[in-house]
Amino acid sequence: MAENFFLDNPDLQFRLQHLDLSEIVEIKEQGYRNHAQHPAAPRSYADAMENYRLVLEVLGEICAQVVAPRAAEADEQGAQFHDGQVEHAAATQDALRALRQAGLTGAMLPWQYGGLNLPETIYQMMMELVARAEPGLMTIIGLQETSSAINEFADEDTKARLLPRFARGELTGAMVLTEPDAGSDLGSVQTKAVLDEASGQWHLSGVKRFITNGCADVHLVLARSEEGSADARGLSMFVVERDETVRIRRIENKMGIHASPTCEVQYTNTPAILVGKRRYGLMRYAMALMNGARLAVGAQAVGIAEAAYREAATYASQRVQFKQPIAALPAVGRILLGMRGEIEAARALLAETGYWVDSLKAYEQRLAESEMPDPSLRQRQKQAANLAETLTPLSKFYATEMGNRVCYQAMQIHGGVGYMREFNVERHFRDVRVTNIYEGTSQLQIVAATGKLLGHALDERLAAWAAADYGPELAPLRQSLAEANALFLQATDVLKPQPRPVIDFYAVDLVQMAASLVCAWLLLQDARLDERKRLLARAYLAEYLPHIHSAGQALLAADAAALELLA
Image 1: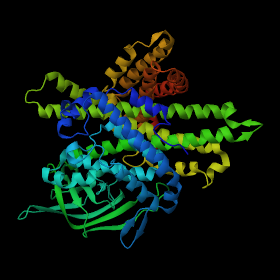
Image 2 (image 1 turned 90 degrees about the vertical axis):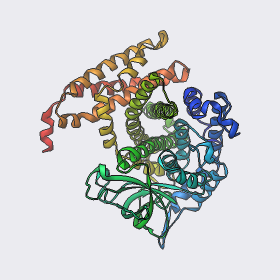
Image 3 (image 1 turned 180 degrees about the horizontal axis):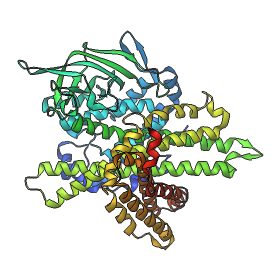
Image 4 (image 1 turned 180 degrees about the vertical axis):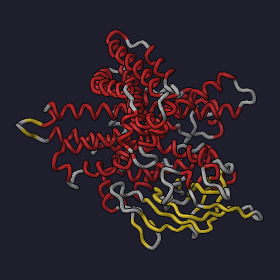
């Protein structure tokens, strides 16, 4: 067993080393003035990056030495439900205790509430580490991010009362959106919120289903606040501090992620606090919650894939057939190389997305603080918003589909023994399956990304990557990707004027093409910095350029005739 899941991962260290968060951190840390009031805050950018590395090292040690050795136990015991109460597996309780003692439960909260004020990019690296160790634990600790939504949108009294307790690990959170008849279609939510005009107190009544960590202390609940409404415009967001009016009716018997309780929750005249403004519940607050959750699930998929790849690589190096380790067989070696390339591509894509999400938050913070903001700041904020909104669904789509492919291949390398419960790869195969289902299925990510892609949201970024200098050795790869850029733009322009049903039918090709193209450019960027990355980029492009061209040709040939088969 590894001693540290961060220190044994050169690619994760590479990602941290080559991040440029200087502008983001300077804004988050108020020009590094936070240090005067909060001694743990960084004094400089170099100090901040060293702090981030230390956080990842501490977490990496906990994951390797406390969490991972008992992951099979946590899966076997799972979350238990008795007499309306949920009890975490003993291994999960011990892991949560270790994370609390290390001071890692308020990672993204500001210093003033006892948090670590981490950027989203670093937080997603943390979630990958935890998911590699035990993905059920990741869903519990990951939902601490609900505290970030409270920090961003709730009133000052609510923040002052709850956030320090979140930072100390005394409270856990849940994002409570889905209902039995409102899964992906959140605009149909029926849980009712009623305001007592005399007291100003809101009360909720209704049932929510498939709620990850629904036994948490604090719920962020999407509910219908506007009498007579039937769509998203009638929904608001509420904070609920769980009491006797909140009943856990059952927990689901799931295929995987057993340590994470998925609850059915009933509210009966439950006291609640309005978050922000009425009617903004879905389009602003829930979307902000879901976008953060989608990045976290992408990181979760990368973490599970990393664990599965390592199991497969170890097994392939030890399993001897035909008088040699099966890793020496080209058919197996190619699978392992493809797995490695996909994992590192997804990790690069998540880091790129995290950068733009962090940039958007930083620019919004600076605009809010400035009486007469620089017009260029507004332009940068619009660029960051455009890229964050485009790359978030692309990241969730690519990373989770990748995770499923990698775990499938890891089991294939194990052969028959991989199908047995005694081998960890069987658990990884079960755990990863939900990642491209929950927090928005892959099909919903395609819907979310398609409009942005048809609006040429990536054009500027693709052009900038194509214009960079890669040196003579990488020039042929740059030229190949520049040609792929041209094909992508041509295919987009062919698809855009098509009738909506045709666009929807071919949207998967558009999104797959865009995701693979962005990943290829990101790996080529890395190739300028590292010899190993140059070899990996060559292998990835050899594998995925044909897929990019195939998707492009499908889009150029888009034909409504195929829709007749759906009738």
